Amino acid sequence: MTPNNALFLTRVTYVADKRQVIVEFSNKNEKKTIRRHFFPRAYFDIKGVPKKHFEELISLSDLKRLKLDFSDTVLTVFGATFNDLKKINNIFSHFFKKHHNLVEPERQFLIDSNWSYFDSFIFESNEPEKIESFSFPDVNLHYFSDSLEKTVSDLSSSNKSLSKELIEGITSSKILKVPLILSECDKNHSKIFIENILFASSVPILYLNEQTKINQKHFWGKAELDFSKVISIVCAKPFNNIGFESINCSCCIPASINSKNIISSSEVIVKFEREGFFFNSVSQKWAEEFHQKNDFKQSREQRKKEYFYNFFPVGPFSRNQEASILFADAKKLEKEKVAKIVATSSLKWTCIENESALSTIINSAKNNIDSISVLLENENKSAVASSGLFFQQVLSSKPAFLYLKQLKKELSFLLSEIPKTIVSSPEFRGSDIAFAVECISASVIEDVGKITSAHVSETNFSNILVDSEDIHLFLKGFSELYNIKIS
Image 1 (cartoon, rainbow, N blue to C red):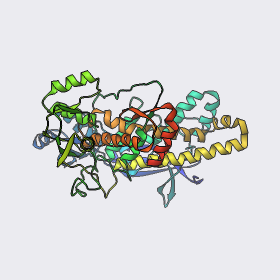
Image 2: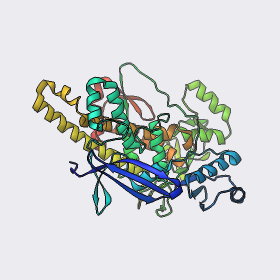
Image 3: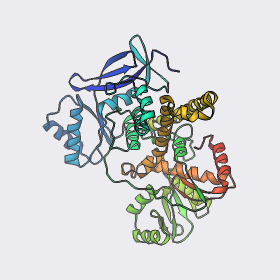
Image 4: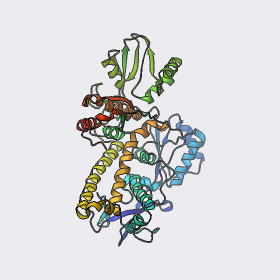
């Protein structure tokens, strides 16, 4: 329950000449503002960029008061103003042909503060303290004549589509940390969500237009289940700690392939026990990389065509040949007795000490979904008790209920989109995190055969096809295995 004196975060304004952000909090009766010193920053991919060349270009420009922090592959730039970062971005685009997407300073501030639009706050000693609440943000906004609650309530009876659109805007603003009116309508919501995670993880956001589609197939008599939300949850703690900054951390280097923080996207050396052997990797990204780097491309192209595969097989390998492949693939091939693990090639691990930004956001979204589900269930029970058969009509006119329902829907959608976006976006091609997510997806799919006698047929990354009559048995077994509600 939100305290009566709680205020909602309604506006963030970046004032470049004062090096500040102004944050506005309000409810229907009160308004407060705070000012914070703020220097925006950006992360740039410097792989293949000579440091001296870049520093020469900087010295020839009119940029001043920059702080540059070089690492092996990432340059962090703190600018006196956001325009400084835009100029740096132009240098990268013009001279190095690397196009980065900059996060606007208002969103940077919110990410750093772990705040968002329409979050609830109380003020102790004139300082804002965030409180966990899912209350509808009943505030007065300058672009509406009435309070937000009354505006939504009136629209729900006169223009339901506009009411729905406004509710969607409010929830998107809260989840994505973008303003209600000036939200990035031309951007995919999952892209903005991933951008926030990348920025929180200190990872450059490269701008690329192409996107790989995950092919979908449809089969009669089958129930198609999308387990992408489960894959997200399994990527996070306590199952794993996958993250842009947590993979191969310097503090938790494993002793061997058997260490508990090893991930199955590690590579090991295997010896093959069949002649002319091909296999389909659990990772499409890794298989594509293997195809580009290794000989016998024509053989793989021919086999892909003959067997109607969605991506290139790995091979061909001769008997007793040794090769480095994913640990996830190696375990599967060893179980099938067609290859044997003989050595370690390249270990990949996750941090034990610090939770990644990706894991933190996934767990936060999951916990919020669980809390909102309880609130929605209570709202339903209360409406049934008070209005009987007309309870749905009552609920459909309550802004607070509509807000909760949409908030849960969008959080669930974004949670489902995380693994799909990482696997399908070109920004992550050849990256450790893409390989790791695909390997985790494969392990989730493999667990299917261990939980029920239900017949499971073809799979497609996060999608599983189950005989329709076995669907309830399957869902029950899977929920018990992962202790996760499937919805």
